Image (cartoon, rainbow, N blue to C red; front, side):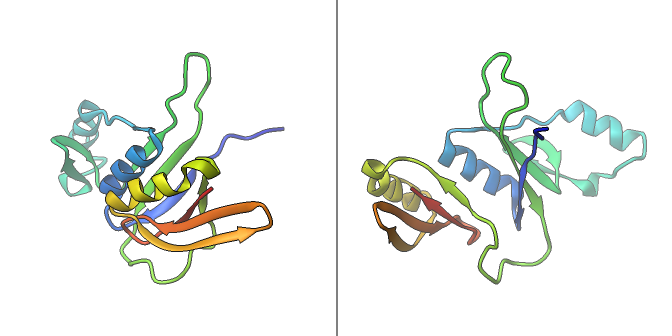
Length: 145
């Protein structure tokens, strides 16, 4: 049996980090249904304190998600959720993403991502395989391969 799953990343500012990753991967930030949020608040299931305005839209404060732009009939596809946490990142990730761009595009991708706020950490090599480890604007490590 195969299961759908999402990767969840802790964040100090989930909406800004979702925007960053959506741009980095060419994915889409999931839209928020402002009418639904207002209805939930009006029914007493949430309060205004549970929301924030981001890019001019009312959104849930606790998180934001990005999704691979699936084509017709492709199902739910790949999803990354950015979840608000109170503590800052302090140690190395136990899990990280590998973004596969191709060996011939590594340096161009490193330049593009660092220009957008990523931090270069190191280059790696094992036999014929090469990668560059970088960190997103909140310090979450990932590799471009």
